[in-house]
Image 1 (cartoon, rainbow, N blue to C red):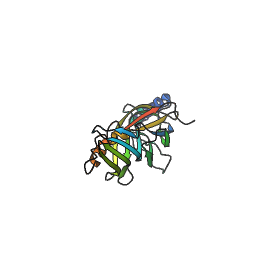
Image 2: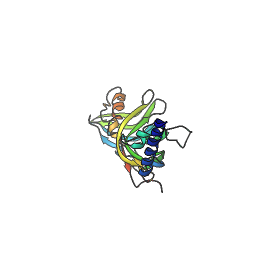
Image 3: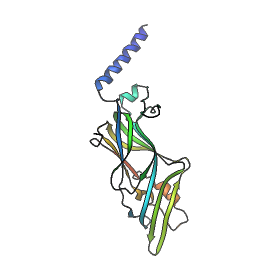
Image 4: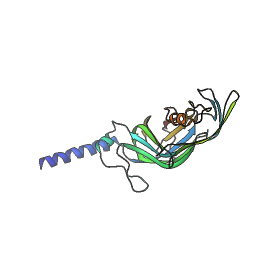
Length: 224
């Protein structure tokens, strides 16, 4: 009996601390915004001048990871309910946006791509899942180097899609802010040698570049 009372006392203390903490853990929704951070015309490190007419990538899922020192994620094992499908977020996931959503990697203007659902509190990183079926991204354009000119038209195919883990984010998530995803298509093709039979490997490595996708939090860009 004493042990049961002690456990109950600890549980009540934890809940009291969390209640005093105020905002962390409450359900929130916030917009996710995407934009291109590189021009459609650029020069690669391999010496090719590239002009792209189209470039896109398919977002399968975006997950915001809770900070390791977040008391809520550490002390409570109950999952956070999603607003769709009746499923639950994985423990340690602060919020998520599910696709598939096709992102225009050349769009210079910020575009809202969806509303993420989750819980308020500190976040440490982002995981991205890319691809619909096995097709992750598409590009179309022309690459020129001296007298050489190569038509670029292809799909990046990765069996099972592509997962980018641990993109850095230092933010306190709430409904007043917005998550911004900046896409740098020039990083995708920077190592490509277009005079070779295939540049798929360079493209596959380039889209994993730490600068290909940069995620930031705008604390005042949220829903009205």
